[in-house]
Image (cartoon, rainbow over all chains, first blue to last red):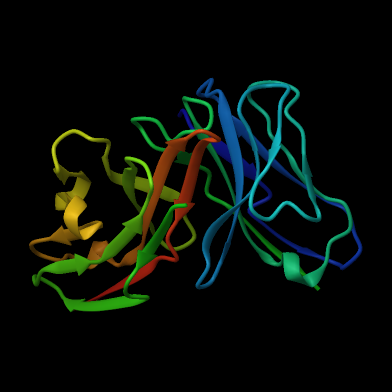
Length: 116
Length: 115
């Protein structure tokens, strides 16, 4: 089934530890995004990638890094986790770079991360 | 600059009654507007979109929204609520400007449906 796979689905992480959230899509979409969802704040963009080999900073990039070595994969890394990074993380993709396009974004099911 | 405001953090309706979820936006350019639905522990799913075609947009599951430029609104409606409609709904605005595309999510409206 075409779509986005995120792993893990949930994780409890000690503060100061390093963590990589995985995201893989099989739709050959050019653009991919990482959002965090916090109660009352909606979704906020962390990082994005318009095409393989390029990345950019979103609204809340501090403490996070991404890479886009190929079209399908877009991992998000927390180098040294802090409690304020407790959130639900969603990976998304779109056909056209930088825009939802006519079909909107496709979202993964999310990773619920708790930093203690 | 662009922004999107969902006027209600939560809405409660009885099954079989109409649903109205309100969304206002501001944009210096012609926007594309979207509504997404998120069921518990799931990702977001596209309900419908407005991209400068017909101002009344029909989506999945009986939902529709009307783009009103004069009121800068894009309210989501459904004639008759079903229990399965209980979820969180997000209004999204996307604008292309000189800096490229920018997409902003509203804070969300949680819809409760009472039996």
